[in-house]
Image (spheres, rainbow over the protein chains, first blue to last red):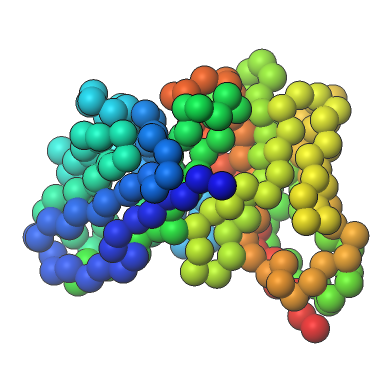
Length: 117
Length: 114
C-alpha cells in the first residue's frame, strides 16, 4: 500500500523556538494532506487540510499563524510550529490521500512526538 | 455536526477471548465508516471499512457491519491474539470527496494477555 513518512519522529525544543515537521508521500502524489494532533487518551483532532499549491484550510480554533502549513509539492507538506510553548507538546500526525484511488483512502504517517521544554 | 462515539477503554482480554468494541456515529447523509488500528510506536493503519448500509468490512479476523438503523459500526473478533494489542479508532467520512477529512472517535486501547 501507499506509504507516508514523517520526519523527525521525535523532537525536543526549547520554548520560543520553531520546529518544522515534514510529511512525505513516498510512492504516490498527494494533492490533499491533512494534519492531526493527538492528545493523550483522546482522539485525533484535525488541525488543517492542505491542498498542493494553495493555502491550507484550518479548523476552528487552530491558530494559522502559529501552525504554518506549506504544501509546495505533490509529495511534501510541512508543519511549522512557531514560537513553541510547552502546551504545544503533543503527537502530530499527517495523512495523505491518494487521488488515483477512487475511494479516497487516507494513509497516515507514523507521527512526530514534539516536546517543548 | 458529524461525530463518532466509541466505548471507553482500556479493554483487557485473555488470548482467544471474543472482542467487541462499540462504535456509534452521528452524521448527515450516508457516511463511509472505518476502523483504524494504531500499534505501539506506529502510525494509524486502515483495518476495515464499509461504504454503505449493511456492508460488512472484514480483515485479519476482524469484522464490522454498517448498521444504519442503529447508526453503529461495532468491531468484533472471535478470538483475539496478543498481537492484536493496539489502539482502535472508529472513524467516518461524511462525503466521498478529496477534501473531506476523517472524523475519529477517541480510540479504545486493547490489551490481550497470554
